[in-house]
Image 1: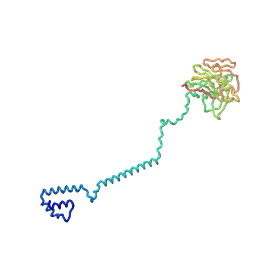
Image 2: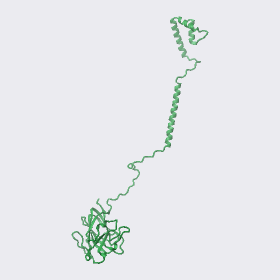
Image 3: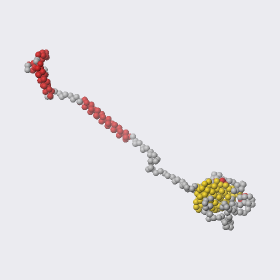
Image 4: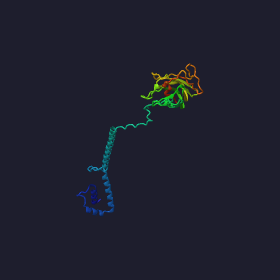
Length: 325
C-alpha cells in the first residue's frame, strides 16, 4: 500500500490530521490515478473497518438519544389524565347518590295491594223484612176517605170510614189489600184511630171510633187467618205471624170498634193472637158464621146519636216481609 492510500485510510479511521493527511486536491488526483482494483479493495477495507468501528462503542462518545422518549412521555401523561377523569366521575356519582333523595315507591294498584286489609261493610240481607208497598180499597159509604191514606207516611191523614146511616151503623167493613206480587210476610202493624204522623201534626183521636179488633185473611194455600187485638192503643201495634206466610193479597175485616179512650195506652207490640187460624168468636164466645169469601158477618153494635160513633179511623197499616229468594 502506498503512502497515499495509508493516509486516506488513516483519515477515514482517525480523522484528519494536518501533519499526515495529504491535501484534498492531491487526494483526488491520486484517487483518479489509482488502479481500479486497488480502489475497490481499499473501499471494501474501509467499509469493513467502519463497521467494526460502529460495533465497538467509543467510551468518549455520548449515548444516542431514545427516539421513543416523547411518545412514552405522552402516553404517561394521557394515562394520568384518564385516571384523574375516572376518579372525578366516580366521586361525582357517589356524591350525587348521597345528596339526591331516593324516589318514593310508586303506589300499587288496588287489585295488587293485597297486604292491606280492605274494610268491609255488612251487606243488607236479602231476606231483611221491611214495609211492603201495596194498593188498597174499601167498601165504605159516601163521606169516607180513601183507604190509600193508610200508606201515607208524610202527612197527617187517615182512613176514615162511615159506619152507615143513623139506625144502621155496624162494624164489619172490608178492606182489600193487593201487594202487587207474592211476598214472604212475617208481621202486620196497625195504628188504630186518628194519630198524628208528623211531630206537631193534627191529631183527631177523640173525633172517631178506634178499631179494637180485626181479622187478616191471607191468600196463601192454607188460607191463613190472623186475628189481632189493638187494645185501643194510641200508636202502632205490631203483631208477628207465628210462621212465614207466602201471599200476594190480604183481606182485612174490621170486627169491632170502640170509642177512643181519654187516656189511651202507650204504643206496645202485641203478641200473637190466640185466635190465629180459628174462627172469629162472637160476644157469647160462639164462632161467628163466615160467608163464601171467608169474611165473617158484622157484629151489631148499640145505636148512638153521638157524632163520634158515626165513623172510625185507622191512621196506618203495614205488612212486614220481603220478596221470596
